[in-house]
Length: 180
Length: 383
Image (cartoon, rainbow over all chains, first blue to last red; front, side):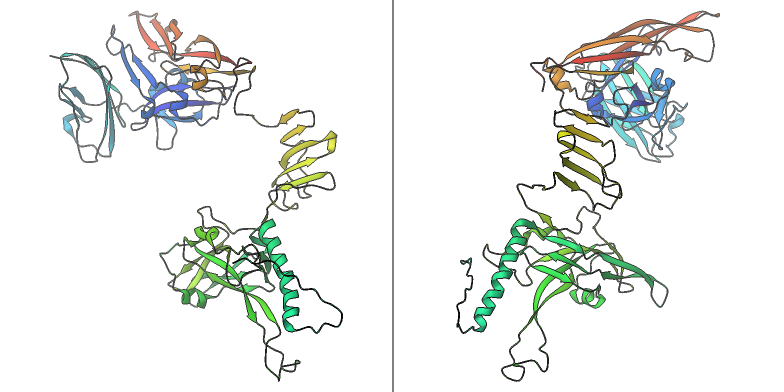
């Protein structure tokens, strides 16, 4: 009988991105480097039907937490975040307002109208596709009272890029961006 | 500087001088000190606990009156230090040492052995002649150190091989106190400084320990303290090694937590982890969501797999997601679309969800799979 489940979540934003159970040693305290040595793959088929978004989150961006087993955590882990009490909670319903990729910059604005965030907000972004041989991963903290996170980039060449943006307390946001 | 050991001998009719008697006394002291120094490790042999008693100052503030209980210690020069009566820690001595640091600091409490000249009884023989003392007191001092200098306890002045016990040469750690400078009093006393350094007990230095009754026992605490771990090497059942927690009579719980018999059979109440034995098979099972990596059985490492020291046999099946449909509509049906692993054991598990009601539609969503991993370690290549 399974009574524990290991959840993989982003260290910064606490979004859950995968789940495993391991009956032989259910209470094992293991790092992501041990349990997911190649990282955790995120695939999405829904946002833009016909297009598969694929992001590989490396193990050093991931933490593992062991919690009581719940079938929904296993089947739909990405619907959860890890709360301050270190327990899984349903994802918030608010979305990231804008996530923009240009050849030289990524800009993330959590709130509509660029309203400042009311508490420190971690932002984690991964960009892949185009001419990139390895994905770009950036993270930053938007201080309470600020409105936007900006990540300067070494100029990207023209192409089609996929961007996954995660921010504390927001739904993940996927973007398919064509740079000319 | 070491020198050869001199043992006094006597003959009939010899006129004994003070030096002869002194040599006899020193010979025994030196022999005992060398035994203590080289066959034991220094520390507390018995008692000497710090005993705090809560009290209040005149204006109602809490402090503790700390007493060192009677006991015996052996210092690093082999000197025996006896505290025969309870001894109160001195506030005045603490203030005199001028070692005060920030609030919350833990000050080590030391016991130092020293010789003192005993006061001569008024009517003793010789008291009116040259006034030479005829006794030494094997005395001690209880004092304090600066926070942190307890880390250098093993760097004290060592005695030369042939030396007897040295005078005022060694600090024996009894515990730690905290001081409140606003009331000039101790406020806490404890065995350790919360950083892993604790009062030190005397030990044994031996390369071989022989039992005479057929049973050798090592205990984590005295035998009457229930719950302490203990190991017994005994002759029972033809010879065995047992580990377990002792009861109030010092007996190891039955059955023990761990036992090795004279035939080499090993029985453990808990899990055994560690390197995997050649010729063995290890198992892991469970469930994994899309994008994760199937965990290895306990004791099997990625390096063993990469080095081909272990063969993996993995079986996966799609885990039907049941009622966890894409939305609240009840008439979704899931069909496995993809359920596979890549070379790195990454799970690719996808379900196609059909909505049967109008408007009929479908969605492809990640799912999870059940897995079983069998890791076989070839007999010739196990670690």
